[in-house]
Amino acid sequence: MRIVLALGGNALLRRSDPITTEVQRRNVRIAAHAIAPLAAEHDVVVVHGNGPQVGLLSLQAEAYDGAEPYPLDVLDAGTQGMIGYLIQQELRAMLPPGSPVVTLLTMVAVDPADPAFGNPTKFVGPEYEKAAADTLAAAKGWSFRQDGASWRRVVPSPRPVQILEIQPVTWLLERGAVVICAGGGGIPTVLPTAGSGELLGVEAVIDKDFASELLAEDVGADLFVMATDVDGVYLDWGTPGQRRLSRVTVEELAGHEFPAGSMGPKVEAAARFATRTGKRAAIGALDDIAEIVSGTAGTSVVASPAAVAGG
Image (cartoon, rainbow, N blue to C red; front, side, top):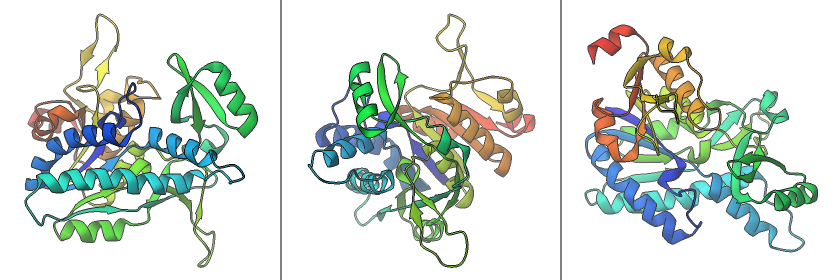
């Protein structure tokens, strides 16, 4: 079976964690323990988040007086290498000797006319007090929004339209490699309008779940899994009547609303994959990954009632 696994940010950094190599390696090691058994039996593609790391690299770059701030596409590329290296190293240690594990720098094309460029919504970087956020907004022209009790920078999040490295990803899978790619949703890139012009990076962050879904379609995945810090999709979350969905159809999900900043994109990505491929998507906790793959944990999203009844 071919599986695309999108790791939520909690697999690398929890909200209260300091952004250090030691902390990230510890969390990646936990994730690798869950992924390694899958990789021993299935073709696996791993996608990861990068929001806190992009923010950290941005702040570090700005510490150099007289240096121009690094654009987000360059920072995305840097975090793909940094985080991919940690995942790659930890996975190699848990797989049989000689098992190929590859991190692939991945560009993802977006539409320059995407309305997201006029409405920044994607959180990146650390949390700030309101006064500090206002100071940075005035000094750097950044946009901020409230995230819980704190404030964080927001940037455009255009939809992915093409995974530019899909051919080498497929080649590597066919040769038995575990592939780590499209980290942070991929490096946001605009294709030339005509001819063989230059690929241009853009100041944006692509939603990891949407990029993972497109990737899952393109590699012919049999299962698309989004691992997060909750054990599934809940209705009436945070109320006494909350209940977890087990197996649902795309049509059933369409009758409910989910928070845009958290579960909403995951539900939308799962529904899109199930609709476009007729295969199963799943959302759940990384600790339950084996059971999610078997269909006994998490929330499974399928295209039709027959798929729900058939298990």
